[in-house]
Length: 120
Image (cartoon, rainbow, N blue to C red; front, side, top):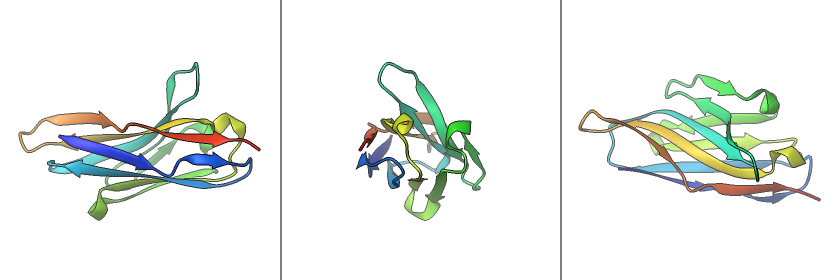
């Protein structure tokens, strides 16, 4: 199995910055793509950004130029650096990973989520 644990959420003022982390653990061969998604109250879960294990990235239009996604493959850790935050960024942020297991299965897993609140 693969477990994802997010950290780094919290309350931040508009215009501020925050960095989220997600650590993957378990018995797997490799973590392929990883990503961040977010869900605001009463809304669907939406893509924020993704990154392949080769470093190719993809961002939602709403966060381009403000958010940076990165990963440390040696530590199986995913990061999301968020800047110029505004109230529309308030949501629960979820880490997602696609992993190849030793029995050749591919699994897609989610973390438990971390709350980000942008408010003065």
